[in-house]
Figure 1: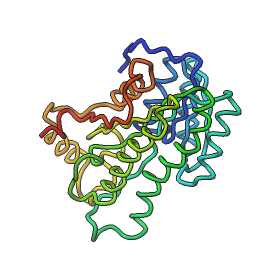
Figure 2: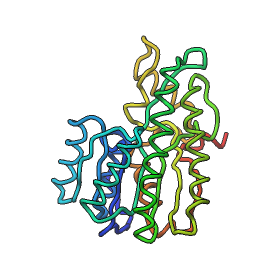
Figure 3: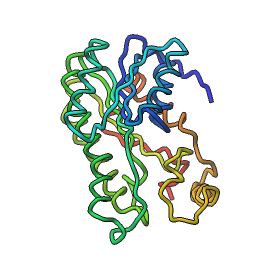
Figure 4: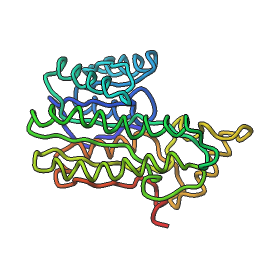
Length: 259
């Protein structure tokens, strides 16, 4: 789906973790189409290279960065690579994340730490690493990809809900800490989105079609959005059109959290 939102990011540099698939890849594509240079972060070499090659084929400027930002050293190195390649950073998107589908008793120590590390540590470490670079540019935007699970509870997602709740409040805290520096920190809280994660890690025997249908039934609008719709909101939050939006956790859920 292609749309012209009339956002010009020419001369801007965007760093996107989790940029090799799903919502992260769609965000990289939207930013590149709007003129930004994009650093595509991912852990899978083949998928990351595929996204970068796709961006370059359109004439965009893009750089692949391989690593796990849940390790603070890697997060620092990703920021350093972006600054070295493009002389600065204007936008950071924390799109890397994982899910574990279980209640507390079905969540092992390993499961808990894996989810919290990917979803909370990675968001915090990359944001923290980027603050000096954003400050050096006179400000910028950090956009966290949270979830409706960061706003309301959901059965069978104990660790995931906890992690996204942390991202929601981290967004508010960092927005307050850095507002005076011109650094805006906001979060997008999608509900069900048509990505590989939507049908991942469900109990054996549950088909993808069944998962899709049950998610669709919970959305008042009666539609599951595409990743590009999350990317559209990220593009808006990166632009001057949203210059007075700070510390917000914006639902993108077809009315799910309004029920």
